[in-house]
Image (tube, rainbow, N blue to C red; front, side, top):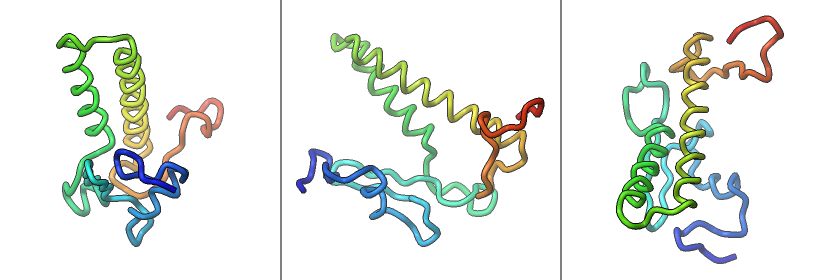
Length: 124
């Protein structure tokens, strides 16, 4: 197996690549390659305070980078498509956050009920 441009092994699955970054409790807090270092929030804000970024923060950074390209002579259909899908991902995470708030599990390590797991007639 060889390392890709970003230092990630190309032949492994995503979950296999992430195993190297798992903390003792099983969650990933830092992802680091030769050209990227991301420190994710590790633990609930209300218990440990802010100690990293959220997935949404990374998506917003990627969106801004692509928008910069779109605004300077590098605009293209592929960037627009990527921006669309990044916005879809951001929106999905916002829906997740709102559901977690409504279900009282925000800032905890407890799972929430997604739309496909909800009982008919019950609102999330």
